[in-house]
Length: 200
Image (cartoon, rainbow, N blue to C red; front, side):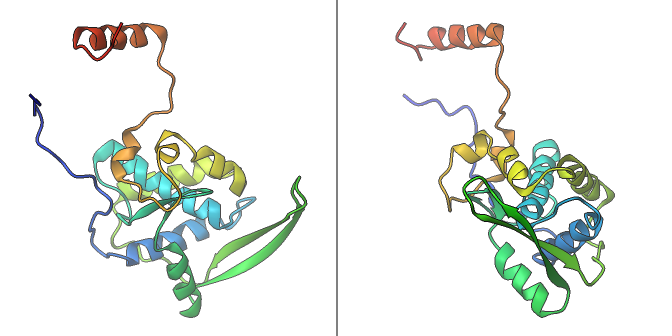
């Protein structure tokens, strides 16, 4: 017999917020402007800043900043709509890209940064002060990191439990990468034995 102590819930992949897709465009402009003097800001880092703000906001208050769909990619989580949105913004004259060559990596591959340069001011009408606190915290967290360092930082348990191209539910923000101490592990093992989850 299966016990149903809690109501069945579906996972949250998108949250419809005022402004819709425009929120993501304005976030791109906001982050690009705030990071204008950052040592590095390529597209990987841009994605990670917005992802961290969205998922930390959802974890702490149950509501993301952009509300857009995310997917797991090789270099970490990213909004699914980001490539077409960036292309559209460039076509509309809202954004341009500055290419910087940083030489070669250990494998001899060229390292180029495609830095988004805002050509328009973001409209912040859709964002609460609380929204921007999450974005600013994310910018501060990644300020001195390279794209690869931000990528590595985003490869936590939520990313590792999915395959490339898989959607990432906002509830994955509740998964923790912290190691449990021995006392907690022993307590969980005891609960497992009491409930018959273990063959020991």
